[in-house]
Length: 250
Length: 302
Image 1 (tube, chains in turn red, cyan):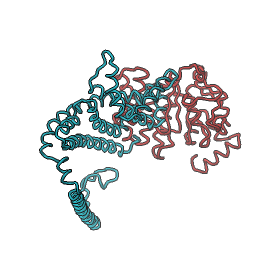
Image 2 (cartoon, chains in turn orange, cyan):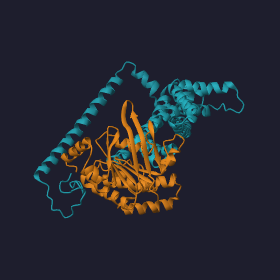
Image 3 (spheres, each protein chain N blue to C red):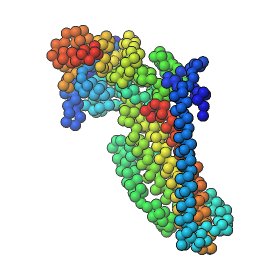
Image 4 (cartoon, each protein chain N blue to C red):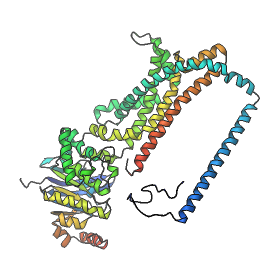
């Protein structure tokens, strides 16, 4: 497989009302790599992910998925979203469906996989993530960690080219964070291309091939985990990391 | 009540069954429960006494009213009631059939209207406007005027092939008005589903229509069951209004006897029959709501 980036962003700008959230974002995500977006709350990490998935329309700049410009108004947005999996901070499972129905909805309705095949594959994935026994439960009967793992399975069920993870452990109790992060680690080993917004600096350091520090609507610092965490070039990055250390999160 | 008989799982916060746990209720618990029982007995006694006094006062006020003997004769005559009941029940069969047919069409039409209002895209612009205009108009138009226009106005047009049957026309008028109400109930439900649900559906690659069909509408309908049943109870009563076109329903059946006898008892009979019909419906609504609350209480975002 070529090393052409799976996701590329150039000069992306996004404002909400008068607030500039993304000023000038450039980003390249190579295949089979993990990119961690770090930065203070409100620095635009989630917005960046929502823009990449076309849940938000950008004001300026361009985004490419596998070399195809997806911000061109003529692109089929549904087709783009089909190739990108998203896991949200608040899980966003469908409460009126069982876990199995949550997972098989997109394969069946979007990709027209026959029900039996979709369910077989869903159960396989659920088993692998330790949720085999929960397939027929409703989401509200699951713990937070189980719900988030179910949401990951739901995103994986359509075999996405790219997985976007938006603060997926932020809503979890500390003892449940580990089980979700273990899943992400496994996905990395399998070669899944991922972009994750996170406050778990220790995890970002361990798993990310590329770390991007967002500040003031730009990628202020970018590099390998050692570069950004070990020897940050920018004063603002240093200050941010110092605050994190003081809060005991690194 | 029993102190010794433990309800399983109640004392164990984690739901762990403590079989063989040699638990003996403390004196503190025994004393607390005795106090609660005494308090419950006292509350029941107070409620009974209060009800009795209220009933007695109401009875005395009504019976001592200056016009009571006359009212009793014209509104509560046992003989007329016995004569009216079979006719009223016969008429009620029409109300029930109307309720069934109108109820079903109202649900379908209401949902179509609600969905039409939430459709996006320029193609659907006229549909959105029409649906909005429809709900605005029929929610504002008094039902009685709507009925008069449809039941009396449509036959006056003398259109070929269009029915002049007051039952069909009355049912049409009811459906027109109630669809507008129910459309708003559905729309409120659709809008109450959190945008993150739609975002999750879209990010899976579902189209807007699929997201609506599989994710948003099912949740909206579940949430709106209590207000929908409320509208259905209301529709049930309003089927009585088709009598203004001459259809012989329960109200009209009573009307006929009143016209002949100049005694109003049949109206009371018809009224009570409607109330009797509404009560099971209301209890059913309560039951459905309670069941949904129980599901929610298990700790979901539903």
